[in-house]
Length: 320
Image 1: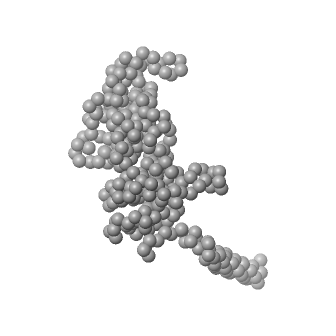
Image 2: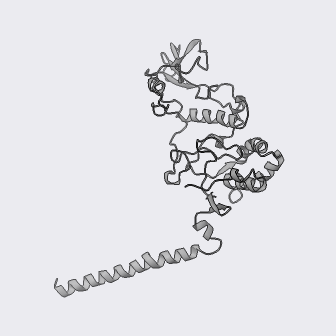
Image 3: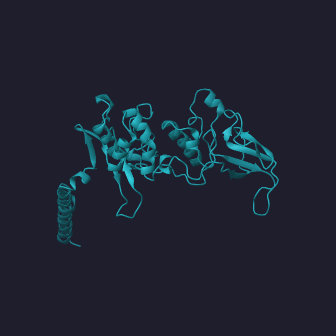
């Protein structure tokens, strides 16, 4: 190939690069940006940002926590569902699920020596199963709403808010089920913190509490349903996180569970709170998909607007 042909090929390639750069790198983004500024689209293109008193307080598409700096529930506000996105939840840069499924029922114990030395349970190696997380959250919601623990009781949960799970050790039949148990351990109730296991006996064998360092995986893992109602008072979205960890909505049932607390703190009637919940409830998508839902941020803003607690009690500007 001579020099002239080489120059012509490179010049053609350069012209194609410049034209495509102008189209895809300049013209296309400008056109898309321009279309996004059309009334009706601008708000969505900008992230569905919500403002109050001239300050950004969040997005209608991304959930957030309504807690103080120490993580305590702000009783004057409706609470969102749990979140696994980021360390403290609802971090848009760490959107994701907890990756725990129905088989996650056995906790990973923490080292009691490290806990006694001052470390947190998590720093000492403790990792709660999905079942224990659900149990703990359910009792926590009951406490927040001023209900007794019977209201927070769920199937397969102990009275001390962990998964009611046994490791049953003994000879097995052809199907793998233990026959004539020789030893039974409540695997999620450590001896260091449990005075007595949730069940005294199982098939005539005394139930022990778990001891750190012992391996109970040789036993058959059995979840014990207990006497909790099949339809718990605390709804599922109050104790489980969404797949993205950013869900801004809660169910109507969870909103209704919080009405009494909100009414008491704001010194208004429960009917007044329910009216606001109804005004901020969206129906099923396209009329048939999903369930009715309540946007927590919009509902809390409506509360502050209609029944303010004072200038210092309002929603703080969003920090993320």
